[in-house]
Image (cartoon, rainbow, N blue to C red; front, top):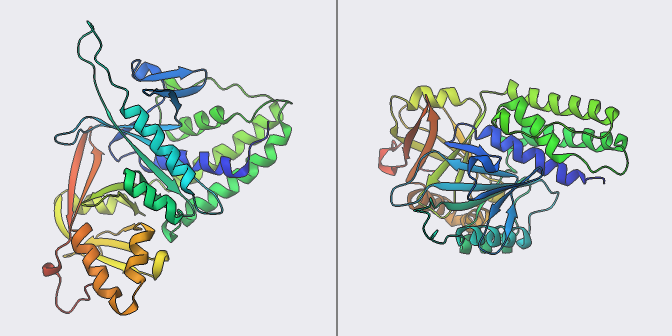
Length: 355
């Protein structure tokens, strides 16, 4: 059965994000052997037990740290690469899944205590989200991440080209075979090292001609990512009901500075106008040491830009209210390192613009 180009792009984007987030403090869960209580391997599909149903999951991460006064955290990661914005139905489905999974906890009579997890859901979109989707996500604590900014143009371009090549290659599948999505994901995870090799499914593909063409496309895509090994995506947790995807062209520059100063003040700048605006973070005392780029939710950008003469003041308000303290977690040397990036308007020179 043929697969849509948009679905292929979404799968490739999910695997790319799992790779870009490789040092952000979580490990991929890919098989029930990693947790026989909560996970179920159904053929080549991983499912998570909910209170009312089993839920298929493509990318599930378990954070290696546990926040204070909380339970261990697991994250559903879903990515959409549509031409149009993601709508309400996608976010509503995410809420239904994570709510049902978090409700799945009952005392095991006579079996002793059972580990419980806090499941969260992050939706990544290459083209943003509709207003209704954003409102619903905010109300139900679903994290929406917009990847439509310039920082991810290189990645989205390569994904689009690879998906087109795979779409053409599937014409050589032995009929009536389905497109081997699980095989494609496993090949990428082998090439990128994002999953334990002994838990990956065997490579079973219908059609030698297809396999050759598809393998070449997947290998070329993995090579592109590996060549940009300095690129990384760090998850920033601000004092706000959303997460920040902090893109870095060279994570080594961030580490060189932050390892000696894990808690430091930063300068935050907004570039561009309206919902196309991107923000940058850099240290106050060494602006050129590193730069992290991110986008804010569209409803915040729309509020900032809705009254032109108040745009500058509202930009500062957002910094002070939501971005005054951003926490990052990163795996480093076998442990988890915590960084605090603080915005303090008083730390900026009077000669520097506040925005």
